[in-house]
Length: 98
Image (cartoon, rainbow, N blue to C red; front, side):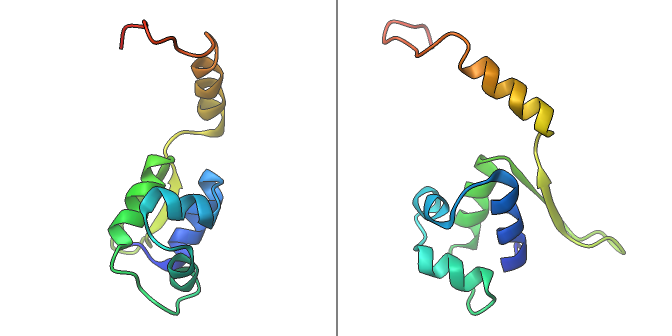
């Protein structure tokens, strides 16, 4: 289960604000802040985790002596390359093949 500290770390890794996470997860920004400050646990922890995973965070479960954690799905160099490739051809037109 994702903790408040893991949520904060994941937001930092994928570089999104609480406001943007609130919109992506449909969880109120104040609820996210309380969760990150360990003053509450929202019923929608799964929605928060799913939104962070959508932005590229990977949650690592606790494994014996190794603690739970969070990391990026892709390295910084792969992420930079992907963003360059996505914008390479300009905006998609309505007649483009999906």
